[in-house]
Image (cartoon, rainbow, N blue to C red; front, side, top):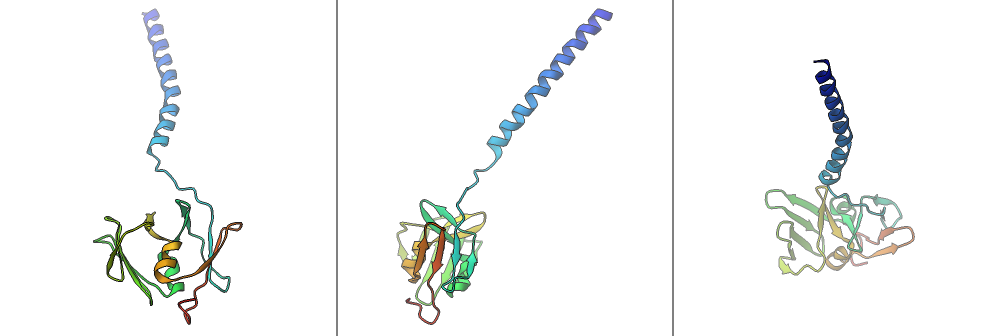
Length: 162
């Protein structure tokens, strides 16, 4: 009886040892597969024409600079509205207006259907608009300093066509 207890104890000990070695490996594997892909983006700073920071929460995606429209909208005299039920973003400016449905990627500019060559993105529940789209639709000019990764928006409410 003493011998079988010893065999049993060795088997239990070996089983526990193997189990303890495999838990960290399976936990690490689970961490790798369950974590969503995180976007690693270089920091882009956005300044107004006076050189004051507007937001640092910008992205570079597909080699384009994307700005959080809700953050920068007030600095550009843009009214931004999100309609959750239809997943639609409305952006109204003095020169134009955009309606973009994030589910269908359909966009209207001034109530006309538009084919998107560059589209807005929703990242972490925030709508980002490509800087180029702001320039093309709302005629918002900007300077880009690639060395410092700084966008300076050259918008003047007195002269919206600057």
